[in-house]
Length: 331
Ligand code: TRP
Image (cartoon, rainbow, N blue to C red; front, side):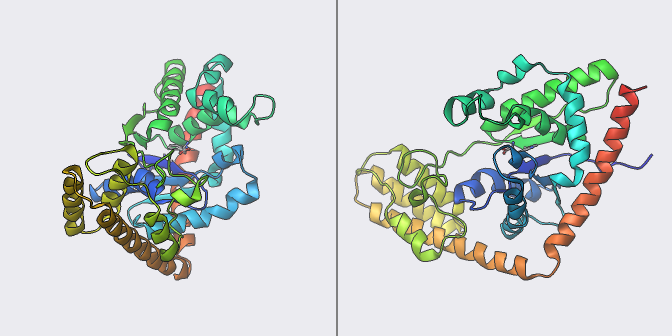
């Protein structure tokens, strides 16, 4: 049998445009940390998952964009396997169907992410049923690569529970095929809108800094950020401190932020100073990112060759897993 490519750490990213600095700190930086620690992760672009709420052509449009963003943010393609989910679409949907036999309709309806969606922004009558199967497709992603660890934010923990449950039930019935993947809980950073209310997100663009923002408009948004009355800490200010320190590239700026906040808590009027530092670190971060991104997209064939290498590994693993699965199921 072919030797499989071992996957220790595995994660998926959504192909949506307009990443914000909050996406960077919450989802991308943790992967960069793993790389620093010597772990070589496998990362895939979840274009099939995107079909739950996007037209196929739109999901496709963002694939190369999001890969360019990740490379520009520092994901080292030499040490990371990056692939596009749909290169193993047939294998994934087949495995999804086999796995779906091991979970009931009632259990899937209890998955909190689905319950929330149906309560807030989708209706049972109109939501497409791929939404219902989302956790089983995610389990299929993870189990296909027989991954050991999956870094997830808080919102994905329930999906990982479904994955573990399905792996256990499958193994109990057919023998040990799947390692039981562990959630590798990433500390959730709750970055609020610069306006202090709600999460930083695309839906409130005045409070969100996008990686593609020009420096001038980013600085303008920072100037409009919430601060707090001298001596007081608020959720909004706290979040802006996390943001400033997260994006900061020098120890000096970090110390400067700590000093300003200590002065603020002691009752001094220094919020103007704080915004100046925030504007500086945001500008430096964006400039750096945008320069790198230009190099990435101008390097001929870079994204293609990264994705080709990733596809080869993902396909080999998928074929091997499907052969194993079908051998035990249909023997
Ligand atoms: N559901 C994840 C999200 O919305 C993306 C995702 C799909 C994923 N499949 C995965 C993450 C497998 C980790 C492992 O962010």
